[in-house]
Amino acid sequence: MKLKTIAAASAALSFVALAHADTAPEHVTVVRAGHLVDTVAGKMLNDQTIVITGERITEVGPTGSVSVPAGAETIDLSRSTVLPGLIDAHTHLTGDPWLSGYRSLGVSDIRAAMFGVQSARRTLEAGFTTVRNVGASGFGDVALRDAINDGEVEGPRMRVSAYPIGIQGGHCDNNLLPHDFHYTEEGVADNPWQGRAKVRQMAKFGADVIKICASGGVLSKGDEAGAQQLTLEEMKAIVEEAHKLGRKVAAHAHGASSIRDAILAGVDSVEHGSLIDDEGIRLAKEHGTFLVMDIYNDDFILQEGAKAGMLPESLEKERKVGQLQRDNFRKAWKAGVKMAFGTDAGVYPHGDNARQFYYMVKYGMTPMQAIQAATINGADLLGWKDRIGSVTPGKYADLIAVNGDPLLDPAELTHVKFVMKGGAVVKGKPGKE
Ligand SMILES: [Zn+2]
Image 1 (cartoon, rainbow, N blue to C red):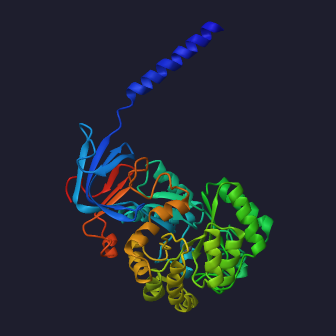
Image 2: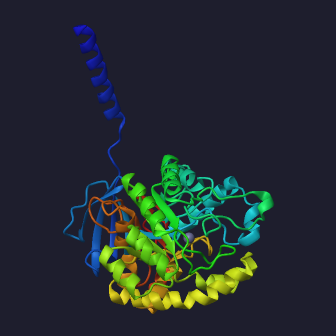
């Protein structure tokens, strides 16, 4: 017995030694940044050196004060501005904007997931190294996240919700087909316990976050964007269940009463927030609820929506809420509500995410504040403050670079030249700008 134990122990030890010998020392990369956006302090730093060991940042400081390990690979971005990888807190990577309305009925869940492979790469190459994907069919977002994590597909880090949860006939249902087809979307819940069951189902099959539809929507058939859908009682049950299972809740909500009840139910973020009123603004501040307001995509919907197959009623709804949403963005930001950058990519073409910075600045943020919304604030909302959102030792080496100064012109962020995710360069040749 004793001998057997010793033999097992020595076998285990030699296995450990062998495994150790097989592991090459972690690759060290040094990035020289001409300018570096410090998203924590909210200021621009000059002439910085970033040391990356494996997939994490290990040291950051003024060039010359940081000791560069021998044999480290150097990436020269001394004529560029470096930022932490951007975070879009509201995407639909499996959604094709050109297959909207009735065209969407011809797309299988598997086909949508395959479309997501291309969207993921485009999003990453646009400088968005992390997304929170809030709504996908067939658990395609779960599959996409896992394929990215396993290195089979190139894309951003993903937090995913799977099916969004909402009422029968609501924004999260699919109302395109008549009764004959007996089609109901997977996320439909019509009372508090059905809501809890749906949370459990999404969590079981891989959701990191729960998405709910508190109100009607622009792109859904037969509902009013501003009208409340889930009741306070239903949302309370869903939020309690989700938080119990360690999942945050994102609530799609356009109308004032749906925003109010979603906040009172304890959701972590309100998506769209188009018709938020003074009470909603006060409650969001009081509860620390994030607003994620997609104020770029109105342009795409109004200009290209008809060509993309969007329903005439959707275009009509967009004309009603689009400008109000932008005005309310300004009002809520001025009042001091927490905001994270989220665009609803998938409603418009993937990779154009950074176009929203222009509007966030136009409607009241400084360029630095807009960048912070897409970095540290997004990291906070995603529950990933410890790993992304700033160029700080200990965090993933998710870096992007642009040629000009994004604090002078936020449109620079629509021309990202260099992207690194977890220490690996995915766009831009090292040493050459
Ligand atoms: Zn959305």
